[in-house]
Amino acid sequence: MLEFKIIKKDGAARLGELRTAHGTVETPTFMPVGTDGTVKAMKPEDVAATGAKIILGNVYHLMLRPGIDRVKELGGLHKMMNWDKAILTDSGGFQVMSLGPLRTISEQGVKFRSHLDNDKIYDLTPEKSVEIQHALDANITMALDECLELPAPKEVIEKSMLLSVRWAERSFAAFKDRKGYGIFGILQGGDDWSLREKCCELMNKIPFDGLAFGGVWLNVLTETIDVIIPCIPKEKPRYVMGVGIPADIVDCTLRGIDMFDCVLPSRFGRTAQGFLKTGGTLNLKKGDMRDDMRPVDEFCTCPTCQRYSRAYLHALFKENEPLASMLLTWHNIQVYEDLMKDIREAISMGTLSDFHAAWFETFRKYHPDEYAKFKSPSRTIMLKK
Ligand SMILES: [Zn+2]
Image 1 (tube, helix red, strand yellow):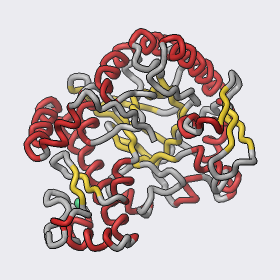
Image 2 (cartoon, protein in one colour):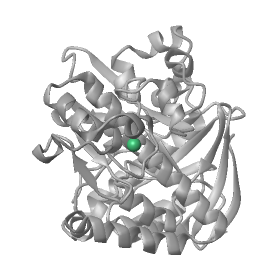
Image 3 (cartoon, protein in one colour):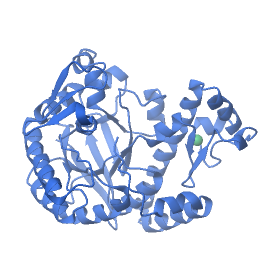
Image 4 (cartoon, helix red, strand yellow):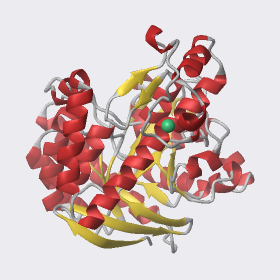
C-alpha cells in the first residue's frame, strides 16, 4: 500500500506526497532512468544530490544481466546500488515487445529470446513480472501490459487493450501488498478515445495504487491526457511513461500529471546534448563551443556549471573521455529536477498557469527552431524507455 496525499491543487495540477518505504516523493516528480541498476555515468549519491527522490529500474535488463537471483543475493536493488530512496521498476513488457521476431505473445504471457543470448527462452507472465519486481525490492511495481505498435486498426487495439486489462488483473492478484510498496496499472487504448475511456472504466475496477499511461504518441500527448484524466479516480497518482522533453513535462503537469520518467537527460548527457533552463538544448560538440568559456548553462547551479566551461566539455567530448558524459549527465538531470522543483513551487503558490505561459514564452524566444519542432503535428514518435 502506498499513501498518496494531495497537498494542494492548482487547476488540474496537484502538489502531492507519495509515501514509500524508502522515503517520501514530492509530486510532480521526475524519475531518472537507471536501466541496469545505474543511472548511466552518475554515482547514485550524485543522482540524490540533484534532488531526485525516485529512480526507475528495468526488469528486462536486470533479468538478463546480472540476473534477478544475483540482485536478490546482493540484497535487492536498493542495497546493490547503494540507493536508499524509492525505486519504480517497469514490468519488462516494453523491451520484450520491442524484440519483434524474438518474442511470441499469448494469453499466458510473452516468451522471448534475448538480444544477448539467442538460445535461451525466457517466459514473462504477469505473475512472473510481479515476482521479479518483488525480488528487486521495487517500491512501485508496474503491471505487465501489451505494448502495441501503432498505428493499428481499432479491432487490433481493442483486442490488445483487453488482453492488457486481463494481465492487469493477474498482476494485481500476484502482488504481495505491504506498507510503503504499491502497484500501478497501465492504461492502453492507443489513439482511439473511446477505447481509452473503455480501458479506464475497466481498470478503475482494480484497486491499483496509481495509474500510468502507456503507448502515448507525442503529437497527441496532451489530447490523450485530457481524455483520460476525467475518467480516472482523482486520488491516485498519474504517471505518463517515457515522457519527455522539458516542454512536455511543463504541458503535462498543467493537465494533472504527477510522475514522469525519460531516458533523454541521461542519454543526451552521453551524446553531448545539454538541456538548458530556457527550454532548448546545446550541442557541446559544435565548433563554436571550442573557445566558449561560459558554463553549459549560466542559470544552473549544478557542480558542472559551477566548475567547468563549455570549452572543456567540448574538448572532453571530442576525445570521447568518460568524464564528458559524467559532467553533462549531472547537469541534465539537475535541469530536470530543478524544473520539477519550480513546478511544485508554482503549484504551491497557485501560479502554475502563469509559470506555464512564461516558460513557453522563454522557450519560444530563445529556441525558436526547437519550439517550432515541439509544436509540429508531425512529432509522432512514441517515447517510452
Ligand atoms: Zn548545470
